[in-house]
Amino acid sequence: MATAIPSIACLGVIGRNNNPLHITIFPSYDVATNKRAPLRTPLQFSLLLSSTLDVFEARRRASSSTSQSGGSGGGGAGAAAPVVTGDFGLLHAVDERLAAYGFETNTGVKFVAVVDMRGRFAATGPGGTGFGAGGVGVGGGGGGLGGTGDRAMSLGVGAGVRGGVGLREQELRVVFRAMQTAYVRLLQNPFYDPDEHAPLMPAGGSGGGSGGKRITSRKFAEEMRRIGEGWAPGVTSL
Image (tube, rainbow, N blue to C red; front, side, top):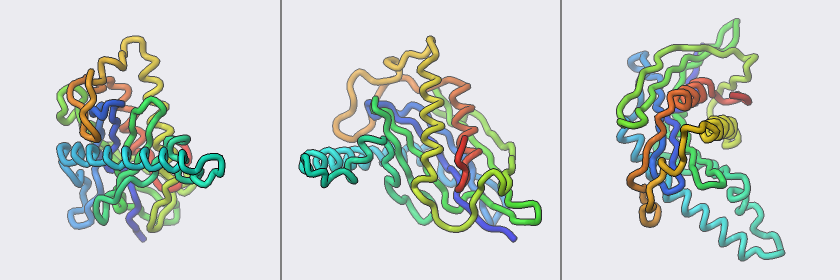
């Protein structure tokens, strides 16, 4: 017996001035061809990540205004949660398969996870539930394909993989925790200067910033690939 479960289609990191820092694209399972391939081109995924900036800004303004209007009464506590936790949850559903989830750090760096709701083929048998995954890294400096991680792996039921339809927002928090940990480790590198990766002037409004370097760390790219390949609904640690 087999079923389709959600998988990560793309992981993106956006700088504090709305400038793109990193993107990793993962292949999705195609039932018709019985192969794995990305659902979108690198350019299309880049545009998709840019489209989330409007949602980040709108949610931030709504949370801020609700928090201020709530005053001491505390009526806006629920709406103000994203400002405190950084977890913006579901940003928007792109189509029947893709949905974008977001997280923002206290320094304004944004993490976006694009999930394919039917991206992974899970086979259920006597030994448990398993799935395959592979990742495609999209280049740091040049913006082209950095490499193809066509390696496969499988997880069993003991690893917490959950089948079935639907996805709870909380299940992406482990992804954002792992992404934030990888980014903090990158900041601890004495050869990494965050100011070199941010344009001097942010783009007006919610548009993407121009200029600034992308993250070219091979170790960071490998961490993003590991996170995307290792996640599945029900996984609690990456």
